[in-house]
Image 1 (cartoon, one colour):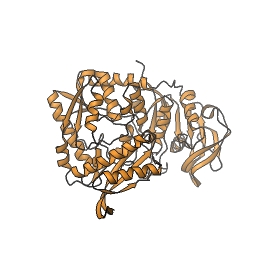
Image 2 (cartoon, one colour):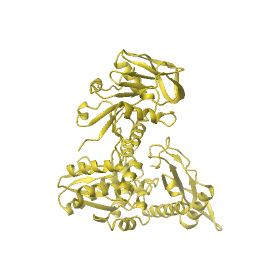
Image 3 (spheres, one colour):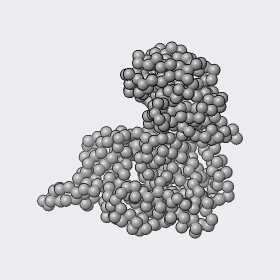
Image 4 (cartoon, helix red, strand yellow):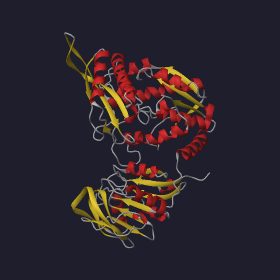
Length: 512
């Protein structure tokens, strides 16, 4: 089987690196993000078509400025440097990079001087998105200018013989005119990609890889009924069939009626399903724990512990399959680039150092919308496919402070009303994610003729493409009012409802 044509993105820490990957995949070309200093041996088994050097927060004059292996330019594939990537190209090949007297952050106008290659089909002038404090002041030998702006002489350059290109702006962001066209010109005309990476091709290649990795070994998978674990289960099941054992663990942190709904949804699939009630164990270990990272670690350790116990009942199990996604990996650790840890995700954090099961994570390089496309191709039911994301630690990270059965019950009832009303108003599918958060504060209220001192619920709904960035959903006031009225009237223990209008960044979607 012919290997998937691949673009490698070397990550120098840019906030836009994942956006570059999205734009490439939207163009039906597979790509991977790797650290800027990845060993070149990692490329040898790939059908490598091109390399992109991302932007980054560093200056090439910094003492520990990140630098890639210069031998990547000897691999015989085109290279495109973006922002810091362009400056690095210039420095590596003998050009000059200087500190800008007038820094450019935001929109800028560039003048195109050559309408071939990168700028094929573009206008003479383009509004682009800049974000830099340094600029290339002198080109290396063999390079030529493609575009300039009022503040910098070389907004885009190329070396025609080596097929090396660089742009000072960010073509991957929506603010850049013809940005997608520029990226696709690089992919199709310069790298000569065919653009055949689709949901179907992903399923074919991934099931083959799973089969080869698992061999005859048994695999267990935590099935929650969410999009990620459901698609993961169908993929692994398609690859190895009865070697897969799907385990649903009721950790006591689920939404209302969730266990019942999952049983109903998967009853007709030809899968081995095992249901385990471990709620008492999880809740006892979470007793008195307030720190969100500690909650995640406890849940992660207990999760694996229960899995290993079930594995022993099954027999000799070698693998644990997980529905880990790209945003999980990126937010949890500087997995493939020099970026700061934001939080530990259940799928990728909190695991014991010596785990007795090896991991299979077929969705690890995918964004949520890509997973949904895979799910549609695998005929996953629409009610599962359209479910909002739900964190692995469940409601434990939607209760700020200590987790108790009483507080969980209050949150479940409030969240159920929120989701019900979103669905009734046909708003549920218009938002990326909606959730309720129980706050660790109580406020004064009046119910009937009595003074109350009860809990506060925060409602959060966001719009997003992939969860990497998000804006708060502008729900109609009458809808928010109806939800608030129902929660206060129907959920004992709540006398106040607030609505979160924070965007990501700076806030994250979940509160913990």
